[in-house]
Length: 115
Image (cartoon, rainbow, N blue to C red; front, side, top):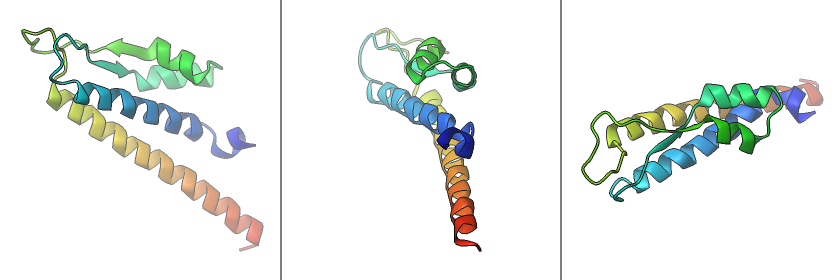
């Protein structure tokens, strides 16, 4: 029932949460020599999940190393402006997806109450 009730939004919320973790890890390792920034291609991962892949399979196939615009001398590929922008964009998407799920739950709750 959860899949039909929430549709694609449940999968999207799970992927956005995982992506927030990856982006947070990038930001936390901004000063770590040799650290390679990664990101999850959200659209690719979501497509994989809608085609039946598990969350871990979808994330594994959609995770890519970020190509830096300006590589650092210590081999770290984290660029704070890029990471902060991706984090903010993903956080807004997470919040929007969560709001859609909450609206769906409220609609079902009102219907069950007969309102």
